[in-house]
Image (cartoon, rainbow, N blue to C red; front, side, top):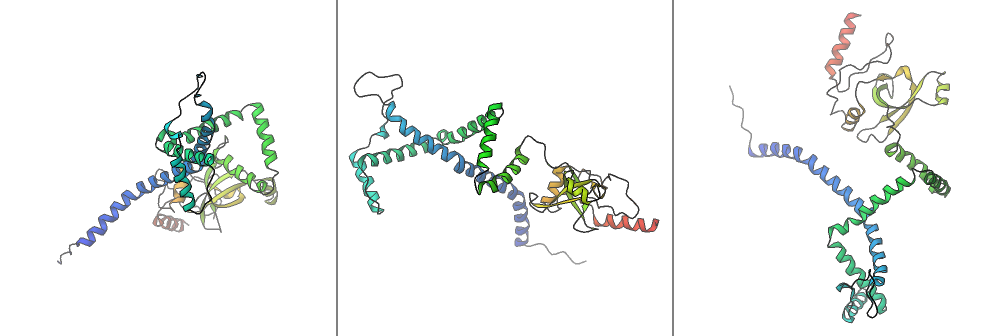
Length: 315
């Protein structure tokens, strides 16, 4: 009996490197996505607020300094060391501007810019100051939500919303963005009601979908007053996009899986199947003779073939 050749070093290396990559890559990608999201929030939300706080502090600080002569007040503070700007520092600042081809500034303006730069550097040396903008943003969002929950706040917000909805260009974008935000983060329950199977895009092809509503009046009138439901057909691997179809309720088959399981099935292209689901979907009605049944989500092709063979023998 011939001996099986022993795998070489490069074969083992590729195998174990692939296993290590499969283990580490999901964790690394998750951390990278979280880091990018945190950096975006910091750059787009926290840093502008920090900049405003620093600017406001620079405007207020001269009024807080203790006077050189006269009585001190309870809020007076001593001038910090970085506030003092020497003529030498101003000369260096003006020289740096001229080296960049910029016009020199007056001494008061140059001293103001130097103080702002020093204050920004001092701010960046303390991590808790860097997080001030994020904390302020969270507090402002909380109070905004608290404000619109009372009667006067709702009235003011409704008036403000009607006013900005009349602005050209803005009115074409704002209603659609608001609908999406209300659907995802509003107080209303999740738009997806249940998971179903429908024959789409043609008969014989069973596609996973989500029931979103009970249809609308014009659709029911078009379908000779039958019960019509609206189904969202998600696309792979981004289930946030897809197609919306309206069809008769009797052509929809409920699936005994949760919405989360169905989303995982769609996002992974069918590689992650619902493990805790019965092989057969339960019907919302007794099917008529000759009506095709959908395959179980994640079922093997051999099971479907075996079922078809048994039906043929019984017939």
